[in-house]
Image (cartoon, rainbow, N blue to C red; front, side, top):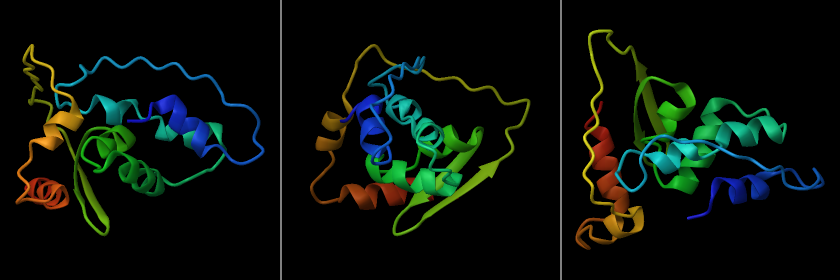
Amino acid sequence: MMSGAAWLRLRRKPGAGSPIPLEMENQIPISKGLGSSSSALPAAAVNFLCGLNWEREKLLKVASAREGHPDNLAPSIWGGLVASIYGERIFFRKSGFPREWMVIAVTPALEISTDFARSILSAEISREHAIYDISGRHF
């Protein structure tokens, strides 16, 4: 997987000068299935630093094409509780987050890379179908 800094260099406008160093802090545990790579993806930084002035929908489309799904990207871009479906088009819905709700993330000590987790998906089910099917449950 390409790092956020490398992706930032590739997305810069031609002739925009040398790459800009970018340091990010991400407190989401890696290799736990919580979306740390998506939240670290500097789509907003690309938009700002490169002067592209993209709408959030375009940021979501471009970043989802890189990440393979919008599940964690949409909440990173819009904030809050956001469900999404990825297919030929991206559908998303932001909902209010009830004040009485509390988020609890339980993470095992075991670390599993995204590539490994994806590799164990049955060959009988395409990754694209699995993503669409699971994401559709939120709507």
